[in-house]
Image (cartoon, rainbow, N blue to C red; front, side, top):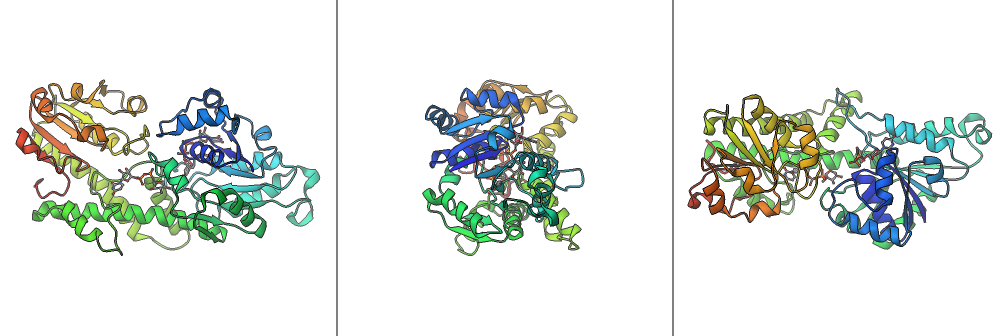
Length: 442
Ligand code: UDX
Ligand code: UDX
């Protein structure tokens, strides 16, 4: 099937590449000409494991192409996926300017049936608004009285559940594919698109599909804030959150996933989606106090980590602090709402000198953290440091040579914001070790 994907960011690019990989002919579109030129050469503007290799192969086989024009890029497409950014406004509401612009431009260039698919996370009722925008912006010759047109089009919601760092794997082996449709024709097109994956498909109305995405992300964020609250109690009563999570996780009704305590959730989805869902609920007349608390716990968690550092380090001013890991999670270069940003900025304000290493995110991070010295490897970071903060659980940190780390550091003090060295017994190397909720941080 001929498919167009508008927006070639983390979501759009992975979606486009994977749709091409399973047999469709895909055009990836982006307003950013520089990005498109890079992509044409097979260079990915983001780091996502496996993506660049896959794209190079697809380009060679002519199964994917790139364009900065909606007009030419969507001309032959039956389905058009919209995956442009939906940033937060200052009140938490999702800013849908880009979605509206794209819907209007698609409409202006529409001459036959198209299925428009919301892929970006959007509030319930966006589908209805896209439909109106398209109706009012079709070329005049196709418009008919009463808001109808000479040919049909469909709007559908097909939320993404891709985790950065394992997005290709998530696309190829989805737990489920959720689709909100308004016509049988749209349903059939989706069955055809996803047929090669043989997934469990859930068909709903448009608004329910939009809500499934918000509800799923908010529930996962709730799990994280819940276990982070348990971690706070563990620290105070001397219990170990890893054991508590393990014990809870064996209950099938609960499950162990997303019960890793740490410095809180970041990324382009959870913080933004929780904010947007709180805003949407409030606007509809319901105060979602549970989610307000989820958000607050996430903020408290970062502040508590900084307080622990201030307490154990004693004087922060002029101390050299080593940081391992900057991205919001491992296997990505994405710095959006990364916990490292808040934590580092607070310590910098207090006069600390920060030396940081991240395997992929240093270029993006340097723009946001101009005062931080980025170094070439994890050992350079700890040289002469008064303490080490582990903020993202990249695999290479877990196998570090801690004898070497001990010898390089000025003071043997480690704060592990992800409990990634939980089983390492760092005390035996001579370190003072503080994790999250390990009953040790009092
Ligand atoms: C985006 C949304 O932010 C998120 O809500 C949703 O769940 C998935 O899509 P992401 O792919 O991570 O997430 O965003 P980003 O990497 O910023 O990519 C968006 C792309 O859209 C950018 O490349 C941008 O240049 C492009 N864009 C934006 C357009 O092509 N046209 C526009 O009008 C605006
Ligand atoms: C998320 C959702 O998982 C995905 O389904 C959705 O569509 C997009 O948003 P992503 O943001 O890429 O994916 O990463 P995810 O693995 O969900 O982690 C989000 C944040 O939560 C990270 O900062 C991570 O460190 C944190 N997290 C995750 C925890 O603190 N504890 C956990 O147990 C799990």
